[in-house]
Length: 471
Ligand code: 5AD
Ligand code: SF4
Image (tube, rainbow, N blue to C red):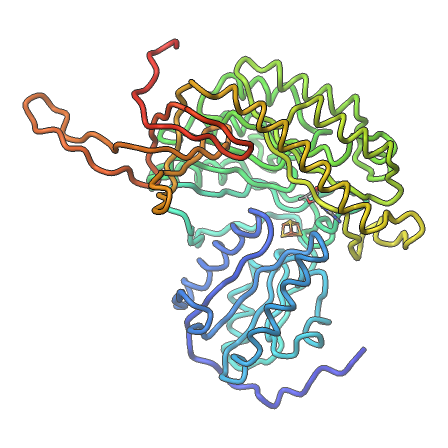
C-alpha cells in the first residue's frame, strides 16, 4: 500500500462554515440532513456556495460506476480550495467503498466516513478541528440504528424519516449491503415520536425510508410489523400524505395492501423494483422471486380497494442477459403497465458477487445502451397512453413551486405524478361579511386541479373546486 502523504500541513481550523453536496438516493439526502444537524449543533453554519465554506463535504453514491466517478471529478475540480485551507470530507457510500485508499486517490481529503460512522461524527469533527490531517470512520454497522435529535431538514413541508438502515439481501449486482451494512430497524416508538414532532412542526408529508422497508422489524417489545407501523404513522393527526420506499417484492405482503386500502393518508403509490422480467436473470441476480411470484404481488396491489400507481427499477444488460431475457423484461412492463420506471444499465461494482464474474458473460456496452433506449421508449409510450385516463379528473396536488417561464404551478399528486397547472390562488377572508382576498398559492399547500392534458411524464391542468363528495 502506498505511503500516506506527510502531515506537513496539519493545523487546527477555526472556519466553522460548511457546505454539503449530496449524490444518490433519498437515504443519502436524508443522511446529509442528519450530518448538517450534527454540524449545526457544533456551531457550524451552512453557506450557500461551496467556495465560501471552511468545511466542504461530499455525501457520495457508489451504486453505479458513473455515480462514484462523479465524486472524484468534483474532488479534483475543487482541489485548489484546499490550498486556501479548506477542509474536504467524503461521506457515504464511496467513502465506505474506497476506505482509506481515498486519502491516496485524493490527498486533499481529510475526512472519510461511511454512514455507519455518523453517530461518531462529533468525535471525528473534534479531531479535525484539533488539526488531525486524516480522520476516518469506516467501521461496519453495529446492531442499532442511528438515533439523533439533530436532523436539520432541508425541506419545509415534506420530511424524510428513516425506519430501517442497511440491507441483508444479497442481490448479486448491488454494493449497498457492503456500503450500508446489516439491517438495523428503529424502535417503533422512536419513529412515531419523530413523525408526531414533524406533524407538530407543520409537515404534512412524510416519507418513510429504508433500503428495504418491508424487512422492518421493530426491535422494541411493541413488535410492530411494517404494515402496523405504516398504519400508526398514517393515523397521526396533521399528516396528510405518508409515502414509503423502497419495497422488496419478496417481503411485500397482503397486509401492506390492506393497510393502504384502509388509510387515506397513505399515498396511492407503491415502488416495487422488479429489476428484470426473466426468471433466468432474476435467479442469477439472486432476487429471491420468480417473474410469476412478482406478478402475484402486482395482482395483490391491483386488488387494493383504491387504485395505486406502481413504479419500478429495472436493470438492462446484467451478465448473461440474452435477447430473449430482455424481451421478457419488455413483456413485463407491457403487462404491468408501470406508472414510472427507473431503468439502468448494469454497472459492475466492487464487493459484489456479479462484480467478480469478469467479462465472460458481459453484455457489450452498445447492446446495453440499445436495450436501455428501447425499454425507455416503450415505457414512455405506456405512460403517455395510461396518463390519458387522468384527463377530465380533479385531483389534489401538493404545490411545490412556480415556473416563471410557463406561468404554471408545479406539484405532485398522491400517486407521485408531476402535475403542472395554472392556478388562480387561494381565497382568504371567507367569513360572512368579510372582503374575500385571493392570494397566490404557496409551496407546501394543497390545491385541487382538473386535469386537461397528459404527457408521458406529467399531467397538465387548472385549479378547480374540489370534486363533490362521492364523485
Ligand atoms: N448496476 C446498475 N444498476 C444498479 N442498481 C443497483 N445496483 C446496480 C448496478 N450494479 C439499481 C437497481 C436498484 C436501483 C436503486 O439501482 O435497479 O433498484
Ligand atoms: Fe447510492 Fe445505494 Fe448508497 Fe443510496 S445506498 S447512496 S443508492 S449506493
